[in-house]
Image (cartoon, rainbow, N blue to C red; front, side, top):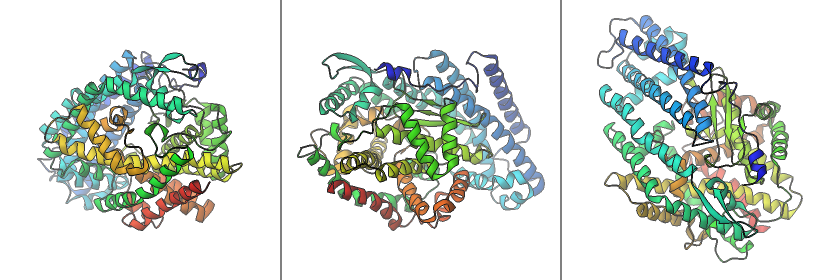
Length: 605
């Protein structure tokens, strides 16, 4: 790992709390403990029990009680979410930080208690479902949370008994969530020997090895691929145990809650319906031959008959677009300002205040993400930045998430609960405007090809690879309901899913059977199928970009209002604001057609 990577900016958390052992953190923890205890007492004293529907209160009195509960839940969650994110800032950048790990486990215990109270509240609201229409108009707080209350009442049908839900919440910490943590520790602390360009063998963290996938030299891309296969193979049995633990627990709970399957759970979490998912997946499936044409063309440009996995991310064309991190910042700011000045002002604030942890290093989580800190109304972004255009696009993507968080300021925590489909909307749009700007300003055919390549790599991953991941996870859940799966089982399912999605676009002798080991998305007990939301975000964002190109600056206020409202409506309701019908296969196909135009141009160059 280069000295430059070591010197790249790291995020600053000191304005949240000066340190884990600081008096400010301890005071915040005591406030959280007090708020949680008071919430528990309030629920007990007011007999918030789904088995005892409130009949002694008139509508106005019931509205006051519900409003007080909402206020107390929001206050507790606002502090708890902030403290969890603060501690995650240490754990995700250094998985060997035992102090942060221990402190996070304490906060997680409090989250269990809050989850238990939220679940009790949800079940109780479900018992009041017939009274809700009469109650909502009696109190402004209740009125502002009407969507959340109606959704809670609807989803309460999928709850076990209060005793069972309480037990499940407590066991989760030493069950599915413990398996998730273990997967994170194993994958973030793994390093492997690899020969560099000079013929010297070095031990690199997996974050750095994964970044070799876009190296300009094939020999390094192949060494990176081979190092990955060897490294993930060395821990496959341990990670398979984690996978079995997470999916086994999730499957049992979904069945006990009366769900059709675990996909059903995620559709409701996404605030969409099966018809929307089917329309989107159908369009994605129909587009696969188009993407295979892209892969075949790429193979020819690289002088090959077929494309091995290590060349999926290979650059083509010629571009001077290598970026230092300051250059990447400047480029993103310039493009953001053309979209709307306040987006550039916001990004500058993130840069100036060290909201971003930039470079790869040992113990740091792979990939990129953004998290919110609601107590200070800020975000933090994790990158594993390398000086290429792909990471510039990723920077824009993650800043889009942070900008979305900025638009949610003024909303309560319950009102900010954005489904992951809509959570990818702002990030995708920000990435799209930066990508399109790069294409439009290409210096010539070779640079245009290089930029198109970078764009199509990302879009093909979000359509083709995401489709393979969806197929993979679906089969894993089906087979895990019958028995545990071995590492070899997971490998086989992954390769078969990749063959179905990529088809003859890739060399079947060189796929990546270990993709399941390191993608953290598979190991989230609270969110299964964290794959199709990315496709939703890309294709919905592409559709919104078309609206922006049509309406110009008039689009911006409506767009910002949409971002502010993502916790207050279903995906279909929010899309309808822009005359978008998510049930229509034509909408999804229209977005894919925009990618198809890039592919045709790529092939022609």
